[in-house]
Amino acid sequence: MTVQEKLNLIEEALELDVNSLTEDKALEDIPEYDSMAKLTIIVLADDEFGKKLTGEQLRDFKTVGDIVAFLS
Amino acid sequence: MLLGKNILVFGSNSEINLSIAERIVSDQAGKLFYVSSEKVDLDQNGAVEFIQLNFYDNTELDRLVELLGNEKIDGIVYAGGMGGVRPLKLNSPDFVSQMFHHNVFTFFEIIRLMTKKRLINEGASIVALSSVSSIKGLKSKSVYSSSKAALDAAVRGMAAELADKKIRVNSIQKGWVITDMNLDFIQSNMAVAENNDFEKQVLGAIDPKEIANLVVFLLSDQVKTLTGTNLLLDGGYTL
Image 1 (tube, chains in turn orange, purple):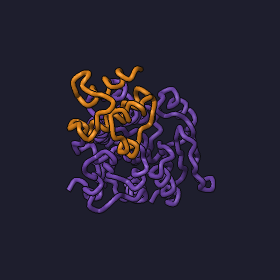
Image 2 (cartoon, rainbow over the protein chains, first blue to last red; image 1 turned 135 degrees about the horizontal axis):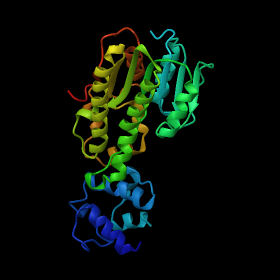
Image 3 (tube, rainbow over the protein chains, first blue to last red; image 1 turned 90 degrees about the horizontal axis):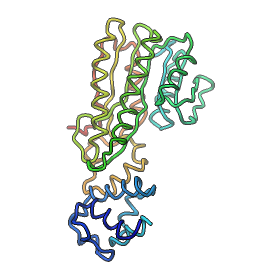
Image 4 (cartoon, helix red, strand yellow; image 1 turned 120 degrees about the vertical axis):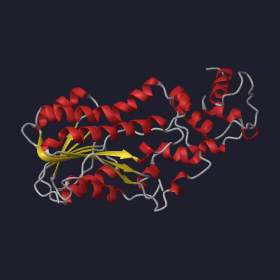
């Protein structure tokens, strides 16, 4: 999966418009990045990438790129 | 309270399930058959007959009935099932189907086989482990909650149908248990939640031994007319 495809997946999880995110976007600047969005990321990481993402790891993420990097 | 009674427990190697088994043994039950797909560390000096099979597989359940042979059962505990938190948009058909299979359909199949083969004694007691989620609307738990609500409803219907054989059927709607804190999905859920849901349980987390005590009480003859109920053991969560 390309970086752009991962960004699109995150956009879908956060219910954002397609191609509205970039890797350097700070998570704290995204109002839609709430608790349910975080849970969605956790489930997506497991379902789509077979990766276990903990709440603690998630809290350390600062940018959209951090999520993309984890999904690599 | 369970002197001489043969008890059949379906569970995993979770602390709640093991507490139930230990409590049943300490109550001098007749035989305790513990059915689990996982290897279970139950050192009870040979008091437990451990049957390792995947009871979520209907073919394996047929094998269980064969293994039991002519052993009649006085008490059944369904402590199986699965958890899982998911936002609505990720409730895939597979996820929904798996949740209901583990939490409801398997329970139906167990009771169907046991009644069909007449393996349940008159006056027996059946206990299913449900959850307070059955009666609470919680974000990301709609599928889990629905499955537990279905289990609670199943218990009422079965209780009505089995009453003529004096067989009682009840469920326990448990709240947060101390050991739940160690589960990955709960940890993740807590880590992302704005509010700590645990704090709503005003009496704190439940000790697995409390669940075991209530299970044994329901299995016993101490309450011969308690049937078709969903007993809430939630530390005050729903107050």
